[in-house]
Length: 175
Image (cartoon, rainbow, N blue to C red):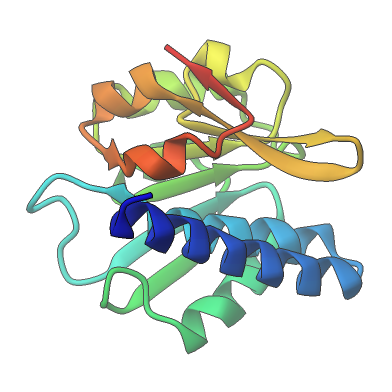
């Protein structure tokens, strides 16, 4: 295995360790917050897209926003200040580098995908078939564990690149 592959596997194992710690605390919101944070390490936005701070919008789940804010206070994302905001407005989503659309949200995936268009916004969702609709990453539960799917077409459309070794860890890939 190449050195870069080892680093990816080690990083992901650390993420799983964080996930297991969060799981022992009993909070699915904590697990998802850790995953969202760790995704930022394996995706690369086009140059100039991220300005002075990394902005994440959380739609429909206050607990995930709170858990992610705690993580972001302790660990920078992309070596810059991180802003985590709750929003329910589709009109504000283009100001974020990453959007987490909870299954509890009143907004539907199709309208968010349409609003994002080909902008460099990483959309993370948690609904069955969300990658078919245009989500970049979709969190799903399988056998009591949270897994993730990646939509390579949506990533390409957004100009956001992913680490190829990390992509291999996805439960399912969509093209």
